[in-house]
Amino acid sequence: MAHARIADVVFRAPPPVKMAELVDHVAADAGGDAVAQVVGNSAITTKGMAVNVLVEDPRWWPTRQRMDRGLTEAGRLGRRVLLEALGRAGLGPRDVGLLATVTTTTHSAPGLDALAPALGMRENVEILSLGPMGCYAALPALTTCAHWVAARRRPAVLLAVDLFSPHLQPPPYDKEAAVVLTLFGDGAAAVVLLPDEPGVPGVRVVDAEQLTVPAHAGDLQVHLGDLGLRIRLAPTMPDVVASAVGIPAKELLTRNGVAWDDVAWWAVHPGGRRILDRVEEAIGLPEDSVAVARAVMREYGNTAAPAVLGVLERLWSTRPLGPSEHGVALAFGPGATIWAVLLRGA
Image 1 (cartoon, rainbow, N blue to C red):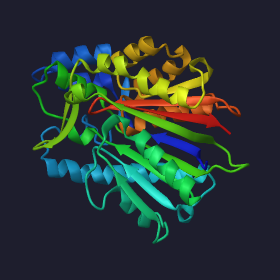
Image 2 (image 1 turned 180 degrees about the vertical axis):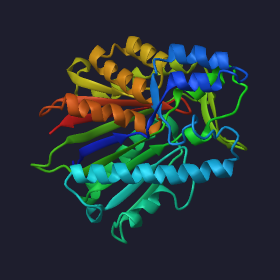
Image 3 (image 1 turned 90 degrees about the vertical axis):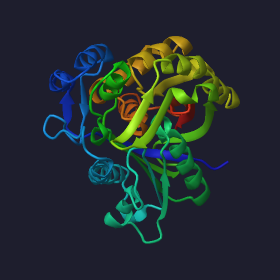
Image 4 (image 1 turned 120 degrees about the horizontal axis):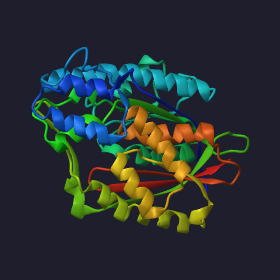
């Protein structure tokens, strides 16, 4: 059976804003005390903000202004990570056979796919624009790209960009609104995939498994309103994820004959402190794997689709998979949807 390999992963974020400064900025607003309390419990110290609320406050912008600015900033950051990832993989834009983009925060046609001609990709490069799927989006997009590469035997690149700073909502802030304001940060990631052939470096994308819990589909939702994106994040979400996350992971490992204890590391979506706590205790993840997810969350917040790729990049560089070693990427998001992807070292 033909497979694809991840040749490189790059995650980047806009300049960081200190969460303490964000607290000070909203302190006088209705619900500012709720924001301060949530930030104090969040384990997030900084996050990237393409629109720095301390410099220009987007909270009362109309939707059109938010979407226009978001597309501009997403294109700028996306260009940066695409070129860096391709360069690190030893490829140029004209080597790409497929450009796949995934985003929940940037809606336009053309949108991020306009980077193909802007970067000088071939006129016949295939374009696939995916989204919005929210926080789990990178893994089905990665799997789709891997299938394409395995079938077509040509390189593909996946670009994931989510920018929440243009969509900051105005006060008043209750606890749920304060969590949304605190948790979500801006980021972008690019993944280069090549045909799985002898001598090709990287890690093989082996298999994937999805689970959806329809009874809790309303616990996390993202909709477009008069003031940009409206995010519904119920406090039940950590418990829902923890109760279900082991199901697709176990199915994936069993189907591929991999023992749970033989997984070298787990790249876990850094969806929030409580989610990481509950997932860690529910399925017994190794402390060092969860520590990487916590570090990415502390520095960048939850960047939605790029987030798990940021964790994967860090594990890639600090603990490369050896020959025949396995890693698992886990992500979860809207619709109470969970994705698990099995990786194997070259």
